[in-house]
Length: 346
Image 1 (cartoon, helix red, strand yellow):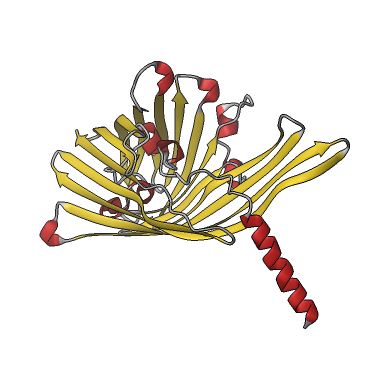
Image 2 (cartoon, rainbow, N blue to C red; image 1 turned 30 degrees about the vertical axis):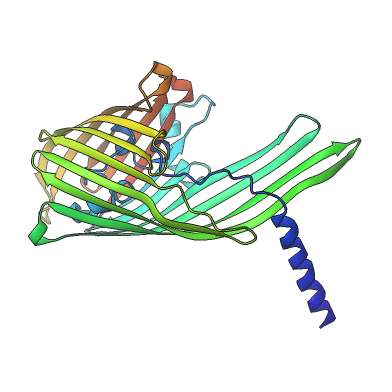
C-alpha cells in the first residue's frame, strides 16, 4: 500500500511540475488553405465549397455529400522538400505509405463519409543561442464522420456536418549546456483528446451555386495537465458559375473572431472527356483529364504575397489520379505538391 501511495504522489508531482511550464503551442488554427487535402481544391485556388465531383468534398464542405453520385476510396499525400526529385519519383504510390508525406484517407458514399487525417506532424530538434537546445514533437490525429441531406421541399438547399474526434501528444524539452553537462530547463510530455464540428450548406440557383461552411464551430481540446482550449473557428463563403464542362469560382476564407486574417480565392476548372464506352455491366467507361488554375492571397499586393495554384490528373472508369502545385510568389523550388490516388467503389 505504501508503494502505491508513493507512486501516486510521484505522478501528482510530475503533473504539477508540467503545469508549471507554459505550453509552447500558441494557437490551434487548422482550417487554412495551405492545409487543404484535395488536389482539386488546391488547383482551384485553395478553396472548393461547391463542386461535389471532388472526392475530398467532405473535407471542404460536408453539404456536398448530398450530391455525391458515386462512392470513392481516396488517399492524398504531399511533397514539400528542397531535395531535387523528378515528378514521377514524387508521384510514386510508395510516398502514400510514409508518415511524413501522408495527408488524408477518406471513403465517401452518397450522403455519408469517413476520413482519417494526421492534422499536425511537427518534429524539431535544434541548438539555439546561449548553449541551449530544444526538442519539440507534436502530433494530432483526426477521425471524422460526415453526413449530409437534401429535402425534397427545399430541393435547392443541401446541408451537412462533420463530427471529428481528435487525439494527440506533445513532447517538449529545453536544455542548457553548462560546461560538459546538459541541464533540463523545461520538459513537457502531455496527451490531448478532443472533438470538433464543421457545419456547411450549399444552395443551387442555376447556373450559380453558393457554399457556406463554418469550420470548428464547436470544438474543445482537453490536455492531461493543462486547461482545455478551443480550436480557432473559421468561415468560408464561395460562389461558382457553371458553364457545362467548365466552371469559375470565387470565395473568401477567414477567422470568425479576427477579420484581419482573411484570404480571397479565385479559380477556374475545366474537364476534358472522351471515349464513351459501356462495359458488360452497363457502366460508362470514359477518359477524363481535369485542369484547374487559381490564385489566393490576403491582399494581392505583390507577387510574393500571392499563391499561384494549378491542378490536373487523369481518370478512367473507377481509377483516378490527381495532383496539384501550390507556389507562393512563383517560386517553384519552395512549392508544395499534392497527389491523390482514388478508386471507385460499387
